[in-house]
Length: 251
View 1 (spheres, helix red, strand yellow):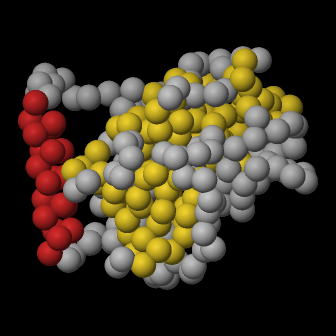
View 2 (cartoon, rainbow, N blue to C red; view 1 turned 180 degrees about the vertical axis):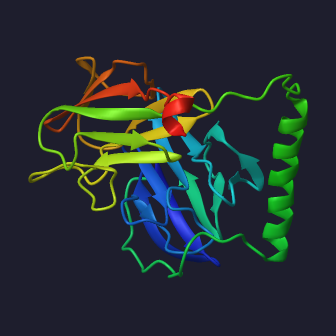
């Protein structure tokens, strides 16, 4: 059974079974909560894909590193060390037991940039990687069109509002107080589905409970398409692209 062991300055804080997937971040709706200002609200998530366990960065401020190398997505191997903020998570694909948890080091405020010698070097690596990727892209001859924004419309079930705009890097559907789409009722998963916004669309990832997309079980990542129907713990949602506002209307 794969697990991650959370460590800080050589001390083991807590161990987590990967299971169907987990999120790492500063906000309380994450599975691995690291209350430290160097960690983004939703920093990264880990999930099983076939026979592999995948770590994926959620466009965090300070980046996610595996064995000292910046990564956006990669398969984990035995003994890999994930660096999230100033905390380490050690991956073990064959763990059987979990030890008693210890409190996670507290932090304050919004996400801040790390400023230690080691992390300045890691930040430099991250910025170099991003700069190289940016320079490799051809210069547009015309201004780039604004990124489309997706929405979730409530089709059936209890919800706080009739539709939700997916305008952040990661939107959560679940029973947590901080979820964008709050699941109402007893025994709802705190985090059921994470919807990550990328440059070319949205990707839904199952993190807890049972979810159907177009009447098919969501078991892996799913690239959302206009008109997709999500059924999450008694709530039915339709994914749609938000219609652009005409220039004369916006004036």
